[in-house]
Image (tube, rainbow over all chains, first blue to last red):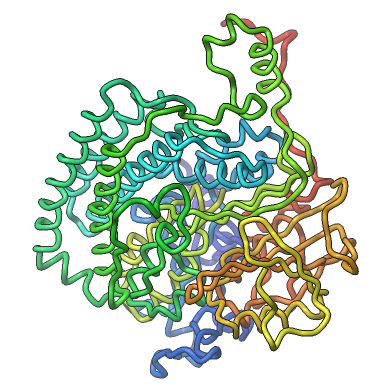
Length: 454
Length: 164
């Protein structure tokens, strides 16, 4: 390469504005202090929480620090510890994090807009791709909203199948969390173990729903298919295996001084801060608030099964880990009760306007054929109205706000994604910590970018 | 239907709502005061805030005295201590939808308001950093508006190149 072309292709330091232009997200990014609105600075350093009467360490407020002492660096969107395409802009003072701003939108695919063009029956296929680690929860949240608008009563078996699948999905999701969290902390064996155990559940999902992930199993009016023959044995084996191995992982991680050293007391958040920021799920419970929609606002048949709501005390990384680990055990308790008490009957409501007729009926009944045809070409009409329903996904409150105009498509579908809201706690948790702790913070918040960006 | 908190501004219309204790319809002037009253009444969490574009909707059920506008902001509040849910629906306007920001009451609405601004173009007065959040900064338009078309990739049936 000649010197002339070399000069053109390599950006030299004197032309720093080129670098800025190519990496800048505009006003979405974290700007230098002198260029930041004091209001926004206050938000970023958590002064807002202080303003509402919440405690923040006064030594922690460093609004007066000048730009030349600090450095803004990018982490992500392709950093391995950001679990997808989360981009964090960190303002560092040496090794300490002062300000953080998550820059999101790299996985935005317009699912809410797409949802408006799909019929209600197709909608579950769309939402299942939001939180790709817990597809069943997404479908459940969406279908609950549709069914509330429709006023459809579900048969008992459909309710219990949904509950069992949702809990198995929670176990799978938390296992992936343990795996990736282990890897972020350098415990690569946990990574392999977590994914191995999750595969047991995914194999059962494949047997039941036909797909390992993005199942599209929960549909308005029930579920897509009945459980396969011999499902009791499969599920019992899954429960026994995972419960036994959970104890091993507990020993492997909880009993490990390095793991505890990096988790205990790191990035604590108080209950008031968590609630002010709208944080739900394991993070809220780790601060000591026993808020679990399965218990406090029961849906499905959660009021008929026996389980404990796991709460933490300090709201630090270790509590968030402990809450999730023990939630695996509680979910397995629920799954076992589902196996014991699974009612017989239909797996979907026999309302020909909402659910397709049984396959065998189509061969012998003209009416069933018409219903089947109408359902899959036109869809069903949902009465005019609006509803917000919420369920407890592995990451927190998963809400679905649906507006219907009386037609076969949702007029507006909005999903309240728990990761999207929980991500707001990241700047607060990271503040004052080290860069290496920042990695554990992202991990312990467990953001799923598919759901954050939707 | 639960009664409004004692500190609520007068004249707020209320109605029953599905899967929720009460739905309130404040004017955009009474909106902030009403949400503050609910917050003082024990609603610790703002679970959700989203905008809706009602362009082309055949007509929604609103209580008497509430003037329907094209844009509506829907806030779902959650009380952890008393296990209640409340929905606040405020009519935000037609041309340039604008409501006060809830950021001072619930810092957690920061990202949600940015999302509503980004996707629907609703402005929130008093928001510290009202920038786009999901779309790129140089994007034109607000994709979730009803007059914003859905993009399509045309399917080519004729004259498509055959295999190889």
